[in-house]
Image (cartoon, rainbow, N blue to C red):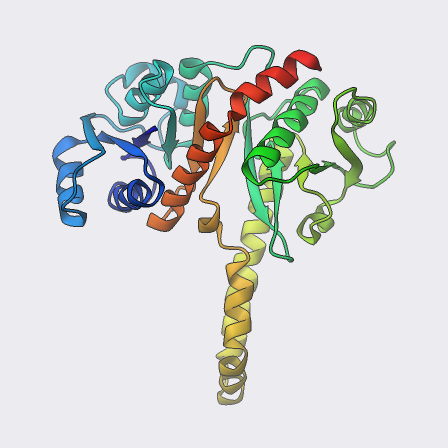
Length: 332
């Protein structure tokens, strides 16, 4: 299996990305295609391994950054690491692509270069959110679409259901609709109409109704469906809240000699709590609804997180996630 890597994308690119790719090659037995500035990438590879088997470096002199306008950059920067990697996947010379670069550019490239699955109007980003009990909830869409229709959200439910069944081995994922209340009549026209589609579907979807934002970390649902604007707000709010909570707790525990003694006693418990919200454990978010496997790694991924993003791509390929999505969309 060949995985195309956008080695120049992301806040920590390319050193940590290359390190993570080497780890993935060794642990998951995949071939790695590294796209980026050849001399720079080659020097990093040589510093980190003496085994160059199953690693290929493809020169790409241009880089698409977060400051670029995504669609314009995709058209103008044909020699960028991202565009070259996407084209390799489109041409099926690689089985998947993983990038920690610009989300907008990757999403645009996945749609315009790789192409949508027949019947899918809008691809979506599925982000795994850790909950308080050690499990995960898939938030979909977490930022790809800001003006969704009920039919889009219905498709998100289908894609999320297949992804969790195939990747996390959850037999009958519980699907909930993000809303401001549990009653089926609550919310705007989008959520009310989407509720009707999910409630009356002929597909075997385990729809459990609405869920409020305060319940997300309780693990009540395996999949949460929402518009991309709402999903991104939920995601950023959770990320910021957990970070500030941990920083505030750390400051309080180190504020006096007495509290420092207490901090030493509860350090193992705090470490365990923090690990529950470690994004590096799942590594990346798949862009579901496109013809090939595309995984968006966190922009600040370290080598562990990027390695696990490659693992996600590998699992999606092995379990034919895209093919099963295509079949389900045709039966809806």
